[in-house]
Length: 287
Length: 287
Image (cartoon, rainbow over all chains, first blue to last red; front, side):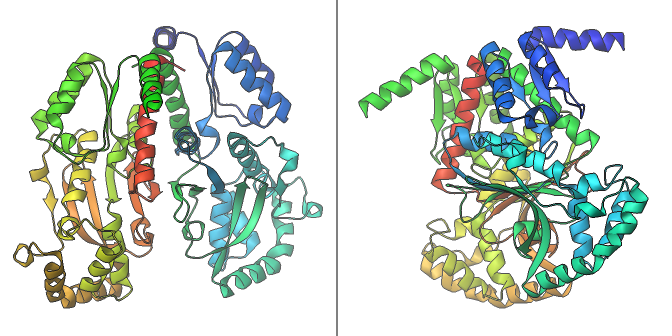
């Protein structure tokens, strides 16, 4: 352990020059991140919280990092190890113009959407996801759409939008009055929604659609919520707990650029973080 | 034009240090590339030819580039602007183990596969693709599978395989005796294959499959040819002229990492090249 710590320190001081702060928490670490930037550390975040602070605070963080000449990277915050933010950065760097980004960015809500399409009752689909450990400890934290909204905010800001979490049109999968603190009781209460979800799924199917929980970012507006999408569209063909991001640009217009795959889990999140650290090592030391 | 040339020269000498040779030809430029490496130029290839030379020559090129401290990049050679080689490099850099790479790497053959599934006769599907400019001037150059085989070779070598083009099991879409130099006559002769293709498509459909022209790379073997794939698999759901690459790794095993989108065309090829040039500028100059 000591040896590893020593090796790691050597790598950082030789290959990166400064240190790298890697934030794998889910806490409000904004002030800590700012302190480390001031001390000349590069920043790699798997934690969305510092990036979803109010826009002035977000901008101040970017400005501070630029002023100190340190990198601020966070590939793992959207889609874990999938090449999402990096692909957007490359499209921008090569002069493409991004029109819209659509994402299914929650494996949990993807699983529930697919179960609904197969005729599972909404409350049963959520209970299954909860029992299999796909949800947060309290399933309301997934169904609220707030986790997807935070990812959408991160994407929107990457696209240059000056917006805040409150500006996003977030449509949760349950009405506020149904909420209660006990997860098991909450799951019971969701049964009230079963018939309306079943009707919605049937309605969608009659039009050749399926329902998906979509983050939709265009130059005007960011929304997060359930949408009808054609069963034969990329998002409609998505299966299981996979994430998907569909990017339409000036160059990828008729047919978009699509990245699909598992977007959560310890290993693929760690991979996203490691790739950021390597990119910092390469760009600040050369290869 | 003079001013642009001057600006471009300035960018290269200031930001990159050395020059960058960008090869957008389809010629055998191996010797030229070696000369530029010797002179200290970084190399960016959209041209597959130098990368599909015999393995000893390929390895000599990599060794020479390493010895001279110059980059040798070629994202545009597989999937044009799609993040294919870069994604593979990142999986490798973060310590993942790549099991298999499957690809539909020809928009032309993708188009023909989809037309076949919709009941179009093989010779008509090829003639349509030819008339719409999706094929090479002589459609045999697409149907031979050699272009896909070259991309498969590039991928296989990236995965560390010591192989040559001759080692790839290439299955062309027509028997050699049908070939003739005149494209129109060749299209006529393809009618001889219509009934066997129609039978194949029907056979596939009865098993819930569709046919796709697949490049398949695993640790043992590289093959290129028509395969039956489940209609509900990623490759089976592919539509139109899109390319797709399906990567299974230790971390992305049950559900693979998939990149989909247009994989040919001047603009997206140029984007792949530009991103390589930018990566060189960043890694050899810092950001």
